[in-house]
Each structure stands twice: as C-alpha cells, then as structure tokens.
Image (cartoon, rainbow, N blue to C red; front, side, top):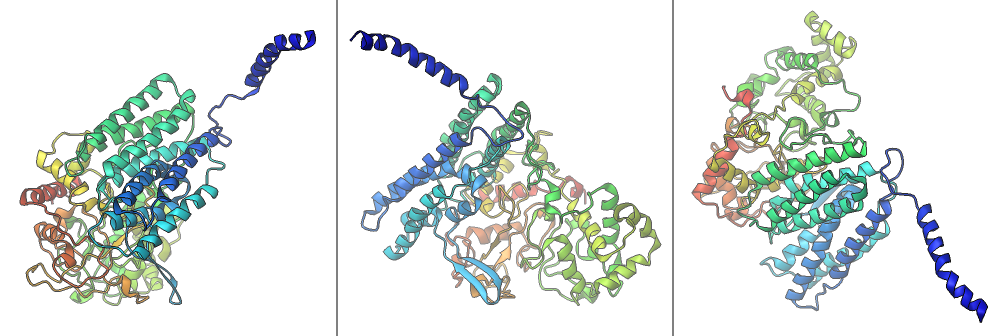
Length: 608
C-alpha cells in the first residue's frame, strides 16, 4: 500500500515533467522559403472540414423531399462550398471549374472523331433547378445532385494539399481576393439568387481562418491590419444590396488594400511569390498596367518587349510590303485613331473586298487566349498567319513575306539588335505581336481614378460601373480589368457566347444573324452562333458594334441586351447563353452604363 501511495504522489510530477519535455521537443512552426509548409496539415484539416460540411448538406437533397427542404439544404451546402472555394481554386482548379460551371453545355473537341458534349452538373445548375421558374424533371435533378454527392467526397479523398509551400498559401489568399472582386461580386456564379455578396463573405471567412493559422508568423501590426480590413470588408458586404452595391468603392478601398497587405505579408515572411503565372504577384491595383504578367501571354522564350522591339513591330505593322499586293498593311484595317478598328460595318480587305466580320480592336488583345471572333487563332503570332494566308487580305506566303523584309536594308540593324540578325517570318510576326502587346496603357479616365491619380468620375459614371458589374450582368462575360471574356482569377481561358444576335438593330422585326461562328470547322450544331467576347475598352471609338457591325450606337447595344437578346426578341435560339429575361434597365440606368463605358477611352486616343 505504501508503494502505491508513493507512486500516486510522484505520478503527477512524472506527467508534468513528461509533458514539458514533450512540449520542448515539438518544433515551432515557422515560415520556410525552401521546404514544404509546416502549416499544411492545419490548412488541410480546415479544407476537409469545409468540404465535409458541404457534402453533409448536399447528401440531404433528394427528389422525395419537398422543394423548400431541398432549397434550404442547397444553401447550407453552398455556404460551406464557398468557404472551401479559395482552396479549390488554388489546389484543385479542374474540380472548381466543374462544381462551379454555369448551366451551359460544354463541348470538348480533340478531332472530328472525338467530340464530347457534356451537360453541366454544378452548384449553379442546382440553383437554377431549385430556385428557377421552370419545372425540372426529377431525373434531371437527380443527375446533378447525385454528381455533387459523389464528387465532394472524391475531392476530399484525392485532395491536392500535399507539398505546398507557404508562398502557395499566400498566393491562394491573393487569388481569392482577386476572384471576389473581378468575378465573385458580379453574380457570375449565382445567376438566379444573386447571392454573390453573402457568398463573398464566406470566401473572406476562409481567408481569415487561414490567417489565424499563420498568426504567430505575423507581427502584431500586420495581423491586426488584416483582421480590421477583413472585418470591415465583411461589414461592407453584409450591408450591401446586390443591385445597388458600390463595387467601385469596394475594389478601390478594399481589394487594392488587401493586395497591399499580401505584399506586406510576403515581405514579413521574406518570400517571393511566383512570377510564372498570369498575374504579377506584386501589383496592388487591379486597374494598373502592372496587374498582369505580360510575359505569360507571350510564346515561351520570346525576346523581352523593349522600346526597340516595339518600334520595329510598329514599323512592320505599317509596312505594306507584308501584303502580296503591296497596297495594304495591318494599319489599313486597324487604324490607331479608331482604337485600331476601321469604322466599317464589315472589314474591307485587298481591293476593297468585304471580309467576313467586323474589325476587332487591338488594345489589350494580348490578354486573350483565343483570336478572331471564332477563336481559330492561337496566339497573336498565329493570328498573323491567318491574315497572311487569306486571299482577300495579305494573300502572301510566309517565305515571300520574309524575303520582302530581308530586301529592306532599314530593318537590318533592328533585327540585329533584337533577333541576332535573324530575319525570319517567325521573328517578323513576333515583332508585330510585341507592338500589339505594348498596347495596354491602363490610363483611361476610369483607370486613373481607380489608381488615385485623379478624382474626376461623376456619380453617373460610378453608377454605370456598378450597374455594369451588378444588375446589368455585363461583367459576367466582360470581366474586368480588360473587359474581355478572359476569365479571372487564372486568366487561362477566353469565353465564347451565343447572344442570339440580330442582323440589324430593327428589334420590332428581328432577323437572326446567320454567321455560324464556332460551328466550323467541326460542324457541331450546339456551337453554332458562338463568338468570342470582345472588350468594351475604348468602345466609344470602335463603332459599329458586334461581330457583324449590326449596331451603330451603344444605345442600340444596350437595348438589345436589355430585351434579352435573340430569345428575348422571340427568335428561335436554342443554345443562347445570354439570359432571355429582360434586364429591366430604365433609361437613366442605360445612360449611366454608357457614361461609364465612355470613361474607358485610353488617354492615348482621347485627342483623336
């Protein structure tokens, strides 16, 4: 008994001593610049928690349950999915695209014998089915929710958080911030409920949680600045109404400030974010010329874009010897004073021959992933090949083009300094493309206000931007900051849309445009009438509008969208991607949107 009594007396001391030794042997979690993050397990645990919660509620959806029950469970599941979203975007982008896909048929084509038509099975589709006005068959409803019920556990089992470094987790937060500002708050992925502001809050709650995991690696000042900023951001989103939310102030006051905090955090951790991605990781303004990483939109191993290469490219751009007839150049159709369009309804080629479509603008074209309205061009250099081969345009083979430039001694010194003397058709095309890549000033009135260089926007212009980004749904296709169809936050793909475009602006007697668009060359009926989303930058200078030049004024463009496109006008357009329901924009709202778009004229062209 005395022995047991003695053991009971010393046991607490043994345990305390063991506990202290155990604590002493645990390594302190710190930031590493050379090895896997010590915080991976903590972040992975949070990722699993959010996905497991999303799965829990999605499994409650069943065709045997009432509509109200299914709606409620969808909202609860999506709440947790949105908390997982920043990590999905960063570490499982393919599944993010699948689970967040719009309710549009996806066509994947490898060749004429391998064409896949994939019906979407995403949260967006489920939202439309459960909250939309149309009655959906139980079989179709089951197809979508059953996919999500199976997919989420699959994602957990095959997660991608394995060997991330701390810089990857910081980039994850940065991409989440960019995604909210440029796509999240536009209503892109909540097409029926317009629940975007609340869902942005869930994204920020995840950013806040990840920061709490890293709390001990941040000094008190930066950590407090983060918490204060996120708290204020969430408060701002909570107080907002989708149609009237001030997205201009949100991006200017919150998004850009958060990008500054990302940089401060990187400096504190003494890490460098990767520069091998589409976005410049150090930029602190989404409407700045520095926002994109331009080299990632150029072919690998291309010479650096310099004043010399731009000058050479501009000279070639204006050189008529690039054409077989020796009478036209790139500048013939792409006139600088018109923001590199030509003012014609349909472009005119050699000898005034009408071409197929309207001349597209060139500024900011570098930030696209597809070229020509039907996407047949792969890169700027590839697009130039299409022009040279066209019998109604340059009508010249690449070898002859090369010889024509070699015959001009004034080019020799320039090619010597940039391309080591090699005058090849490839280098000629790269020089022209380099000039086009330089056309990204981001110095319009709107940009200058976003950059705090001036404070000149009127209330109407700010209202126009907010409508463009919200109620009018323009930004669900024309993504800022370029307002092309290249999708944030990765900017890895350019979207194509089917608007049900008419031949003219006569909306009382509408006739559907018959241009097949993406139908060729594979002749997939579900792609007929699809065209690349063009930019609205410098739009005040680029009339007439649309790929067929159907609309002379911006008022006509807005009226077409306001009426719901071709379907809204009563035309038979089975694969239209534009919602056919009217936008219900009044005259003042339309005027405001046009006023905003007029602020997107770059300073380079203001005096023309």
